Length: 438
Ligand SMILES: *Cc1c(COP(=O)(O)O)cnc(C)c1O
Ligand SMILES: [Zn+2]
Image (cartoon, rainbow, N blue to C red; front, side, top):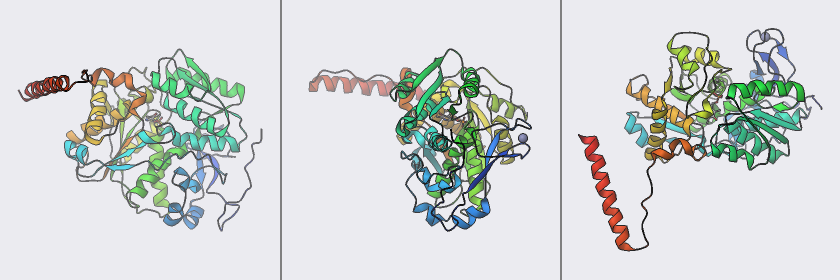
C-alpha cells in the first residue's frame, strides 16, 4: 500500500503546489501527514484538512472555476486530492431553484431550494463526499473501501466504488428502507445488514477499520470525505452570482455537512471570491433523533446521545460526531437548531412536492418542516435570501409517504367510466374543501 503524496504537478503557474497541505487537529492544532487518519494522537480531537489560502488566493479566480468541469471538480483546488483526474461521475452542480410558490406559502420573498435530490449518481448529497473520499482513497493506495451508513452513504459508496473499480463492503442498520437497500445491492458490493442502530454499526466499523486496513469513507478517510460537503457552499455562492445567501436551513445527522457548508462560505470570503457577509445557520433534526436540537434548546455546549426513533432514518444519528461544532456555529451566526415531528416531516415532503415539483426524502421533509416553523414564528427574515438544502430523493423512502398520498382512481377504458370517476373525484374535492373551511 503506497501512502505517499503524488508529486505530479498541477497545470498552473505554481506547479508542484497544492491547495491542501496537512491534516490539522481541530482542538490542539497538531499537524499530521495527509494519510488515512482521523483522530489526533495527542488529544483525540478530530483532524481536518488544512489549506494554503494565500496560494489559493493567488491561483483561483471566478473565471478559472467557471472554465472547470460542470461538477464538484470545478472547485478542485479547495478539495483534498492530488489527482489531475479525480473520480468524476458528474457529481454536483445541482439546480438552485427559486422557490416562488413555496415562498408564497411560507411568506418568504427570496427562497431558494438547493436540490441535491437530483445529485449524480445516486440522488443524494452523499455523492459529493464519496467522490472526494474515494479519489483520496485511490491516491492513498486503498483497494477496498467501506462505510457505516444510514442508507444514502452506502448507495454512493457502492456506486462510485463500482465506477472506480474498487472493492466495496458496506454496513447498514438492518431496518433500512427497501429503496436504500436495493440502491446499494444493485452495484454488487458486499452488504452487511447489522442488527442494531447506526451508532452501533459505526462502532463495529471502527473495529473493522483497525483490523482490516480498509478505507472507510466516514471513519479513517473522514477528514477527506467531509470536505466534499464544502461544494454545497461553493455552488450556492456561484449560483447566486458570486454572493453568499443571508440565511440557510440544513438537515443535521452527524452535523458534518452543516459545519462544512460554513467552512466553504468562509473559505470563499478568505480567498476573495465573494464579499464577506453574515450568514445565519439554521439546522433541522427529526424530533425522534434530535440530540443537537435538544442541546441547543437547553443552552448546553455538549450533546447527550439519544436512541433514534423516527421515519427520517437518513439523519438518525444518536451520537453526532460534529454536534458540538454545529452548536457553536448556530449560536455565533444567530441561527436556530430545531426539530420536526414525523407527521411534520411527512407534511414537509408533501408541501415541497405540491408547491415546487420536487420529491424529497424524509431528510428534506425535515428541512422544509423546520423552515416552516422558522417562517411562522418569525425567526427568519422574510425578505432575506434564504437557501434550504434538500439533500436526498423521495423515491428512496417510499414507505414513509405511501400511507399519505391517496390512491389512483381505477377505471375501465371507457369514457363513461372516466366521467363517473371524475365526478367522484370532484365531489371528494368539494367535501375536502368543506371540511377545511368549517
Ligand atoms: C447523511 C445525510 C444528511 C446529514 O449528514 P451529516 O453530514 O452527517 O450531518 C442529510 N441528508 C441526507 C439525505 C443524508 O443522507
Ligand atoms: Zn489534538
